[in-house]
Length: 182
Image (cartoon, rainbow, N blue to C red; front, top):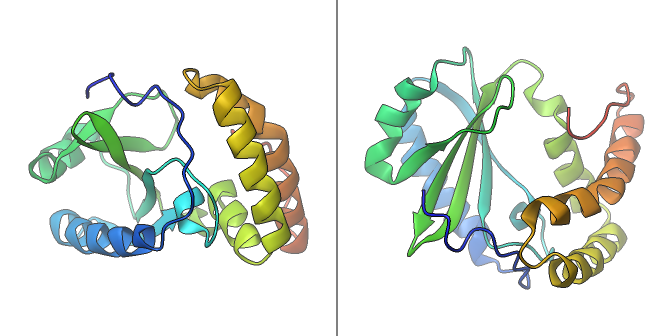
């Protein structure tokens, strides 16, 4: 993967095209990864109506059994996805680019506990709380200016807000609290 443009933090206004882009990509991925994939969900800020976001379509794909990265890499290479080493346990990340800029992230994870993952709980909670969408958008704009060329700093700076929302979502669903980055 090219390193040239994905190290710039750029937050843009919400676009309804993001959900259409996700649906097109989901159809492609289900065809390419069948029969391995159980479900694919649109996650991240581009999946939340009216949420400002970095214009990257994040997707979570649930699988019955997580295979090694080379199996998925072989299947995904013709669709423009490349494996990204992250060191995350029980999760594989593949990224797609256009003109040197990342456009899609595909996280492949076991289906067990899939819908109790913090990322999906965060998404669903924000979808039903527009006041938090506005607050999160303001925070993201401010942090994007402050951490323009430091994506890790940008993510760390959002952690307290994300943790707060995840705690609210987990409490509402009577799930045990857990740190967002575990």
